[in-house]
Length: 81
Image (cartoon, rainbow, N blue to C red; front, side, top):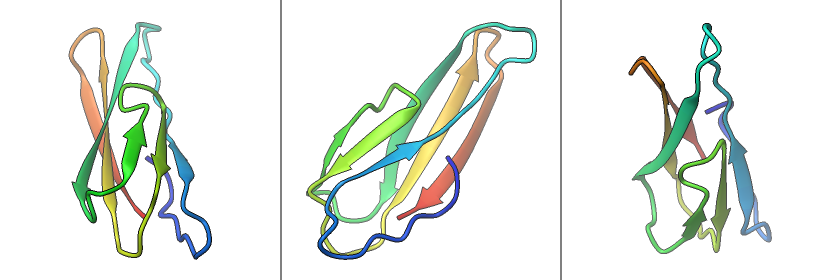
């Protein structure tokens, strides 16, 4: 899910980007989820490599990116915002 991100006012929107690959060239699926933090924000792109966060409010957020390939191999990472 990448490096932790620090956001300061007046910024209220960011994009988190994750990458993954399958060594044998198969397809991969992305799945973002919010682990903790204020839930009043707007989230889009949960099933893509880029997660868009809008209407951020003060607080600490944790998001997790799960990547699953076509054989069911799985990896995950968390990012703090």
